[in-house]
Image (tube, rainbow, N blue to C red; front, side, top):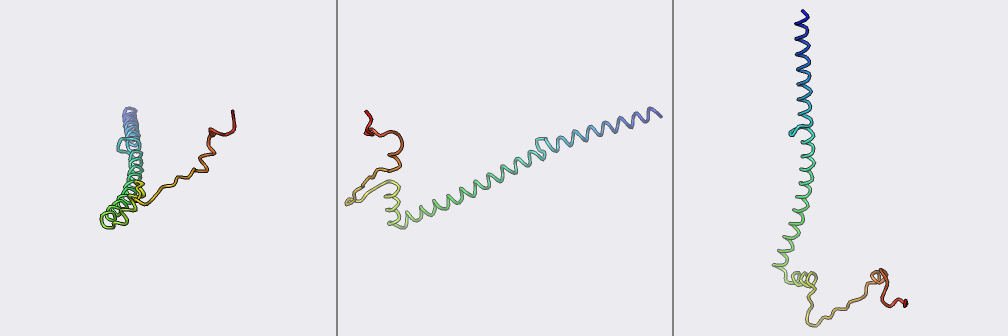
Length: 111
């Protein structure tokens, strides 16, 4: 009778330990819930990044189409991005008032 009871208790303890081990693997294992949540966050981040890159790609495609079909737009972009001038144009550079406030000027009256 005592032997039979000991056998049952041993089985219960063994199956309880096995359940705890399996529960740990389900939660923290390489294919567990924690890894699933981490991958789900990574997936959402990559999905947002793809959406941003798609929008950028669409804008660049639009710019390419406009550059190929509209000469005024192409000239505007070349002048804006590459700082090209027409023959009859002159560039005037003005000092940035904010830039003169940073640091000591060479002629600030100090000897």
